[in-house]
Amino acid sequence: MLFELTRFSDGGDIFNLFRYITFRAGGAFFTALIFGFIFGKPLINLLRRRQKHGQPIRSDGPESHVTEKAGTPTMGGLLILSALLVSTLLWARLDNGYVWIVLFVTAGFGLIGFADDYAKVSKNTNAGVPGKVRFSIGLVIAAIAAYWASMLHPDALSYKLAVPVFKDVLLNLGLIFIPFAMIVIVGAANSVNLTDGLDGLAIMPVMIAAGTLGVIAYAVGRVDFTEYLDVHYVPGTGEILIFTAGLIGGGLGFLWYNAPPAAVFMGDTGSLALGGALGAIAVATKHEIVLAIVGGLFVVEALSVIIQVAYFKRTGKRVFLMAPIHHHFEKQGWAEPQIVIRFWIISLILALIGLATLKLR
Image (tube, rainbow, N blue to C red; front, side, top):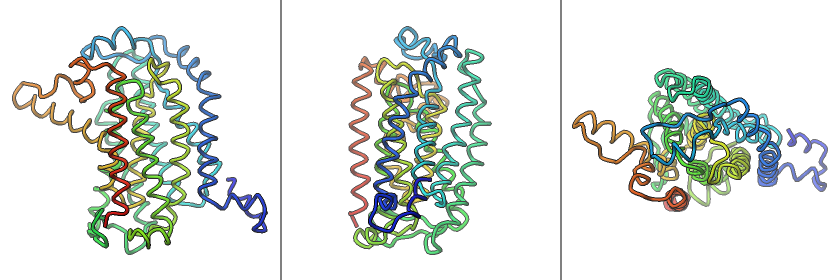
């Protein structure tokens, strides 16, 4: 929206600043951050009034959760998504298709998560919207986004999978690219959702991954950077940096209230939406494989659940004391802040490895 101010610029005045993606990204970050600080407390108070019992706590989970987390409201993801939406619409170019793809996926999965959270708190049960329903709707949203992105990609990249490290390697998947991209988006959404089990555990890795993907989006959206780095040029993706900056600002505003002990939980409203956003950005920038590196923590969390369920069905025994894997470490006696901070460190290391793939050719 503010980009339209460039119409009044003669090239040497303050309005010219709005031409620069980096300037507008900074504006989006501070807009979302301030939004979070201003509206965080009122939203939490509203959620407390509306949710008599707070988020239902699993009776089979770690014992400390029943006593320490009971009564804490959920749906705190509304704060992040509101800040993100306002900052993106304010600072991004609204004629950019990639921005709308990511917003569409974020809002779509946010609505799925909101419906699930609402069903849980209104009935005071862990059983929300049936998993098959959530998964099916998510696939539809992902399919639309995948096809949309393929239409926006240059002909040389459309329906193709870029392989990191190996320059000029493109695998022509044809129409198979659509279901592949669907798996990336839905998988990312559900992986972040599984990671969101401790105070602050999911939001910081999401911000780290978003920041990394934002840098990648900016780099592959500039022809001079892509020539230097020898990566594929995807014109227009630079605007995604503004979205990721807003996500980081909104995430920090939320973390202010979610830091242990949490005053509010993100809920499926936030975790599904933010995970879906990461998947959509990866698809838009042709860095789907790199997402598996940058979001490696989410991959491990999801794999721990898959392994646990599959092994239990086959043998009747468990591989982990409890899945997802962060609960396994809780059962082993690790303190919650210890798990959270160590997982943050792992996320940062993985993000740096992901960024290294830009230069490693």
